[in-house]
Image (cartoon, rainbow, N blue to C red; front, side, top):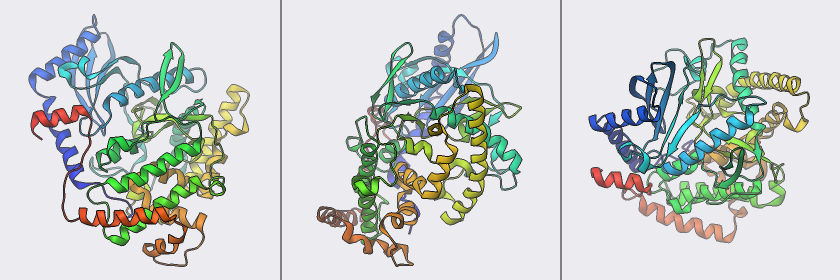
Length: 488
C-alpha cells in the first residue's frame, strides 16, 4: 500500500509550470525596476543602498532593499501564483495574526516577528503582481533547521535530523523551539478560525481557518474550491467533522493518481468514513476530544525549524511564514511537534515504524526542554496553571495515539497509512489480518448503508477516470488570468 495518496500529477505539473513562468516574469527589466521603485517609495526619505531578488520559498517570492542609514532592510513578499490558491485571503490572515502575536506575547514570552510596514491587494502592487506584504527583514545567520539537520545536505534533498547530534546540543536547540511553541499556546480565542483586527489592540475570529491542507487539496488534489469549509467553529467536534468531510471530498474529486484499483478505492473510502465516525459517535469522540468548547489556542500549520531564524550565537532572532495560522482545537497544541526529526513520517525512507522509534528518542529530549520552559515561565510569572503545562499533555497525546488523530486530520495526502497503521485498531479492535491492504474488508459492517452506496458509486467513477489523464483544476482568479495571458 502506498504510504500516502500521491499528488495529482497533471495539477502538479501545471502548478510548477505557472510558478516557474511567473518567477521568470519578475526579472523582466521594467517589472524588476518597478518593484525597486515601489520599495524605495515605501521607505522614503531613507536612501536605499542595495536592491535584489531575495529568494523564492515554498509559497512566496521576496525582494530585499537595504538602506544607507541602517543594517536592516525592507522585504516585499508576494504569494506565488500556481502555488497559493488563496493569495488575498492568505495575505489578509497573515498580517492580522502577525500583529496579534506581536501584541499579545510582548509582555510574557515574546516571539520575534517581522514588523509589517504595509500590505495591500493586487491592484495596489507593482505591475499588479499580486497581494503583498512589506515588512522588515530580520538579519540572521541561518535557520534552526540548518543547525539540526545532517551536514552536507544538498538543496533538493529532504531534511533529516543529524543522527550524530549530541543530547546536550539537541536539548539546547529544542529549548529555543519549545519557548515559541509554549508562547503560542498561551494565546487563545473563543472560536476556531482566522483572525480579523477590529481595533488598535482588538481582534476577533471572523473568518474560516485557512490551512495548508485546504490549499494543497485544491492545488494538488483538484478539489473544487466550493467544497472547502467556509465557517468558523465554536466546538472542536464540529471542526474535526469538517476535516473528516474534507478527506472524503478530496478522494471524490482528485482526478489523477487517486486510486490504484477498485479495492484500493474501497479501502480509502472505508478509512475516511470510519475516521468521520470517530467524530460523529459520541462514545468514540469522548476518548480523544477533551476540550470541546475551547478556548482555542493559536496554531501555525507551517511552524517548523526551517522558519526559525537564528544569529551567530544560535539564538532565535525571528520567526517567519505565518500564512496558515489560525485558532484551532486544543488537541492540536497538546500533540507533540511532528518536526522533531525534521522529516514527516510519510516521507521517512525507512518506514513508519522506524520513524516512530527515532521520534520517541527525540521526544524525550524535547519534553525535558519543554518542562524547563514551563518552570522558567512559572518563575517569571509566579503562576502556571496545571492546564497550561504542555509537557505532560504531549506525553499523553503520543502514548495514547491522539497524536496520530491530529496528524491524520491535518494531512490529507498522508491519511491512509496513518489511519490503518495508527488509528483503526485503537477504536475498532484487532483486525485479525497480517495484510494491512485487506483490513478494510473486515470493517465493512461498520459502514452505514448510504456510505456503502457512495463508495460503490465512486469506485466505478474512479476506474473510468483512470482511463484518461486530464487536468481538472480550480485555481484563484489571478492565476486563471495569468494562465490565459501567457497561454499556459
